[in-house]
Length: 639
Image (cartoon, rainbow, N blue to C red):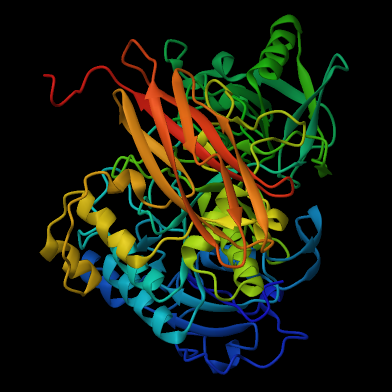
């Protein structure tokens, strides 16, 4: 349950009164803890307890960057660790929230809520503020890391990241890469979100090789909502809007029919100001999203402004749901939307009745990769596979700040890789609790090599992208996290701080620039192949011309006397040779190196192909994802 582990959360603060942060049955605060419960607006030492053992806030950086003071007059923000926007409360409770009976959002998803490591302690570092859509300055993040390292946290959870283009790992503007390097050096595992710029390639954030970077997936809970048409046909959509439903049948029409300007296409997806209030008033409106530029919330605003009382929003299939709050909104796919439109076109006076959503679990195949989840390969270091793993990040129910009128019972649904990150932070705490001496690299390796690539339907995990293809390592890294298997991985890939330094050298960074990052004197060996030979639990070769050999070393953390055999799934067009093919561990042999040689059989310039290398003793399956791009044309040397 994470007992004895301290998780630090760098985010927008915490709502300490939430039931998720109660400390019933928790023992004394660990004596090694050096943190404080910093005072501020509506926050003092009484807001901390044996669960929420520390809280700090950092403001100087954001004030310096923006020249703005926090606007606290509308209760959006507090000059203290108190969370005004709910994001930090949500992520903290996801990572280590205590048990809460009958948690729900307006009656939906009712059940027992708990964080990934419910008996771990929480330390809050507020470095993100309700200004410019939740801004976090580099200076405040660096200071938060410094204090967290000083205070004695074991895990750091950071649902924050930079956008493309990324800064280099030795650039002072990449505060997360720099600060996390120092945290890793102190044995602190750092978990970060992958970003929400999917489904497009090379959008992944937080790409430093010492981080655990997490993609977002769906879960098997859904909220089916019935739409009954005037001809007694019933269709299912999804919704989390439980109020303001008109019980009887109501007029139904298609947005294009009630356009303010019939020659303007903007009414099709219900863009603001596009609807004729005289024709819309009192009706349910069907809108078709033409792209991801128009979302359901914006469309509901346009319908409400024109006097509509409900929205049926047709778009490409995704699982992410948001509450429209003021009018009921139901999301449907294009197939259902088209059938409803067919009814509207045929009926003389089309009507519909919108039912209340229900909570259903276990009936939908999961996980799927969330549409918004950022994808690899890394634009900064393509030889480092990112993301590392995937975890639940869609419609996640967790604690929330009640200052937001859209919450109920102190809980809310949020979606994003921000929600996936603390799931893995909690799992890292479980592993740390079971294996206190394991390094951050060992914990990451256990998560990656034990992850799953199949869903609850027994099929490959698919992505909620335009093509709904099978997910590859640039979507989910090693796969969807599997907590029980991660606790007993059998073998792990370990990495020293010196290895990370030589990795930076291989990227061409100068000794002085690396020295500024590491705060040590650096002497680069200039091994250009070290990027490929960093002892990661994955193998990525961005440019394979003919033949490349990659080195790795495995550490036995399972049975003392173990024999592992290599199982190879070579990427298409690639031949693989593993040497040795069998690894025998015993009391005196706990570390064993091996090499993998890749041969390209491609005759044309190609794109990435994927495979895997799995070491197994019959009980453990230690799987490394492989991504290789075979090339025939060097875009730099051959021009």
